[in-house]
Length: 84
Image 1: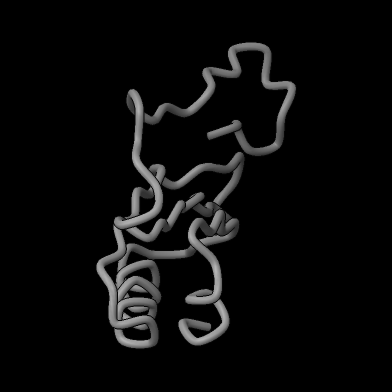
Image 2 (image 1 turned 30 degrees about the vertical axis):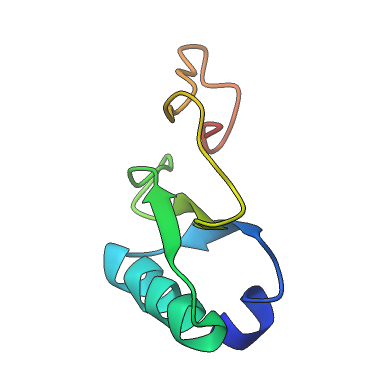
């Protein structure tokens, strides 16, 4: 996945099951591209025992972040998984 992902400057990944998995992809992107990458991951989100996270990865030389990240508070429980 790092080889394919390194063709892009920004990746949005759904259904990330663990921080370890996100870190493995992060390292794979660095190795495949030879460049520095950054990632940010939401907390685990879901209604039942099945929970997943969203993770954004970006090439540090091409993308900059303005502001912070947040999970949408879904007080009415409209979404199966809140937006990130």
